[in-house]
Image (cartoon, rainbow, N blue to C red; front, top):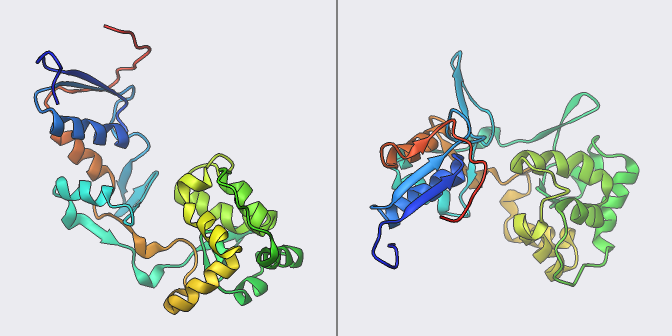
Length: 264
């Protein structure tokens, strides 16, 4: 990467979060001679990512893992020499609980992200009311949406499974995974496979039952597909530190707020 007239590039990266640091790292790879500056308004890098070690405990104050079905984060860790720190979730503790009326309740077996693979655990769970369970079962007969228009994840779940399933099961689970408002999250951008299942099978319940026949070992799992997630043994701040260490000396400007942009 070089300037059309052969001059060195001057590049400013606004923000010091994980996305900005990954972009800065890639820029240095593509244009090692560029004059790079990373401007961060606060006194630390990493944005919302922050790992705290206290009293023998390691606490992630934001994201605590990343998915492996999209390979970019794992490849970045390998490039940075962090592959030896990658750890998977412990199968012994792959369970999900939600709070209902001040008590912890185990998520129904077979309820994966936004759809059930088994109906009986959904029918006997104390998390849903009888009407909520009936509405969820009627998902089998709800006509599928055939157009390509996007919708929020909240609208998708309410349309397919009803408001109670959304409020008491899906929203606590998915909001915790994505740390975002489901009213604003795009279903096509976030979990497009559920729309694909709706289009192909006409119903999420039909789709999940078909997958259950292909993968019967997953029928007792619930919540997110935790086997797809990994994290770093020393915390995700170690990824931030490794990226920062790869940047040219003096390229990071902390406590420097960018208030405007103008053409040179």
